[in-house]
Amino acid sequence: MTDTTALPESAAPAEPATARLLAEAAGRIDAPDVVLAVSRNGARTVHTGGGAAPGPVPRERLAHELGSASKPYAGLLLARLVAQGRVRYEDRAADLLAPGFPVHPTVRRITLRHLLTHTSGLPGLPADFYPQAVPRWSTDPYGGYPADRVVRAFLRARPRHRPGTRWHYSNFAVSVLGHTLAAATGTPWEVLLHQQVLAPLRLDATRVRPGPEGTEAVGHRRDGTPVPALDTGGFTAAGAVRATPLDMLTFLEAHTAGTGLGDPESTRPGLTGPELTDPTLAAALAEVRRPVLRRGLRHTHTHTLTWFHHPSPYGPVLFHAGATLGQQAFLGFRPDTGLAVAATATRRVHRADTFVATAYGLLTETP
Image (cartoon, rainbow, N blue to C red; front, top):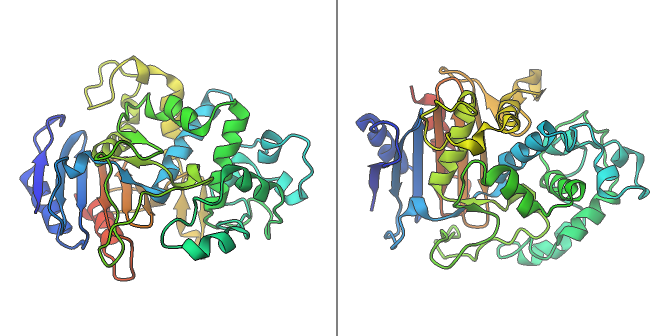
């Protein structure tokens, strides 16, 4: 069953062409539940569908696991703390996390910027993560690896590459960033994220832990059987965010409307009110949109602090995808045109999966 709606909080009526486009795109995704949501300068269109019958709560109002699409939230948090002068991008993580603790010289050089931009030299996950994770790889690989173990693994690490010299995607590094910011501010990560990002952007349906029964989307294995909610253990900053597709759109709209932040005349949805007049939030949103590094053959891959940054016929696109044991998520926006795309699916990724390609196409091929 499917449904396409122009949401009441839209700033303008949804275009029929957009509704048709989303319906066609959803038909290419095989999952029990699918949500494709588009915002054009604040005018929202949401299509819901999938192979399963809809439940009592609309799919777009269920919290979905974002997996690695949580990282832009961590990036915005760091950028705001820097704008507030509470930390600096060049602060050394080990000095903030465990002052005076003896670490390898290479670890000593790792900064907050290195951790966030995947240039720390750390592996994707700690070496001792795998022995405890493999026996429960399809059910709970992260839950048995708590925060203190992530911190110890970092302080005892022996990176293969000097920080800043190579790009290597690392859940380990972003998780360390989360623990470092908590130590530097004396505030638990979950509280810090809420204070600095979720509350100011009015993301009331975004959290890092499962909510009450009936409020969470249920993930599924490739064969369609349900899986339990993800426990990220000590890797919270790298993948624990769960949000409704509507909240995901609000998060993206803040990025596409950065010039509206702090403007009391702004009429864009979710972007008015005294909470958003804080210049540190506007500065952070601008900072995470700015390209900061290139990598790959001929340096063709561009990245901001926290977003993948690609060209398109309609201007640059910024995006991040994520996957958990039974769910997928995609966040993306075009800052030049005010287009934002949020997408979710409740089936584990597989080789022939079309989810990311379909969501990316909505972002890059839609006028």
